[in-house]
Image 1 (cartoon, helix red, strand yellow):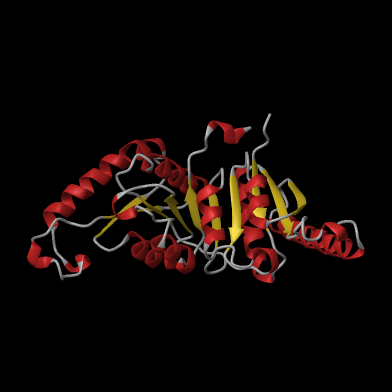
Image 2 (image 1 turned 90 degrees about the vertical axis):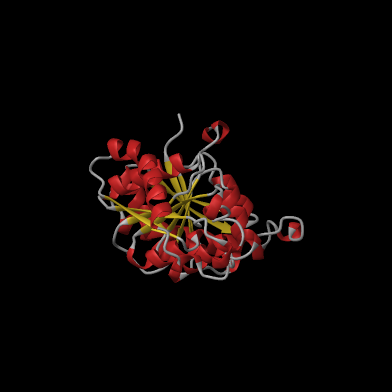
Length: 293
């Protein structure tokens, strides 16, 4: 039977300790195992003649030290958590995606060096965020953030899963929940050059708010202990989410959607959130059946 596990990637940078601590505390709060993973970036083809040589052995020993040090950080942060560790060899993106198969969560940081440099910049970031077989948390922003959990929703089918995740996280952390819905109101053509967030459309806002409340009803009933605040905005989803991140402990968003939230994790909107959020960002995605094996 599959053992529920959170996988956290570490690169040995001092800034990455907060990522390991976050993952360890999350694993402890859920009562599940934490697996600390470090990837030694090594090109097997180009370095095949030295694979068992002195240079490789030195690099491997250093990599194992990085992994062990991160595991010690995790044990200190969460003494009650079961912690395992693994030092993998190869390309960091590919090995992390493999390590995440069957995991409850993959946790990565927003800074790095060596094999993890630019992990959250450019194509590597997009592959991790869009292709991981499980939800991903990007730990970034201020250390030990507090406040409510925020979630961005639209009217896509994926929103039900995102809301279930966000309500569950809020209940697990004993936090309030801020539900954010961004939409563009229908306005006359003469408003085309007016910023949408400055236009007053109370009738449309009321209708949108009613739709959001209808979406929330099943989750309010399922998690009556979670206090919920709704925030409606005409601004872009990324702008609103980035703004509220300065007072929240986590932002939960889906990896698929349409409307204003479309592409939140793909293209410029998603990159804005991953680069500028001031708290961890939870990238939610439903698992496929094959991912659980």
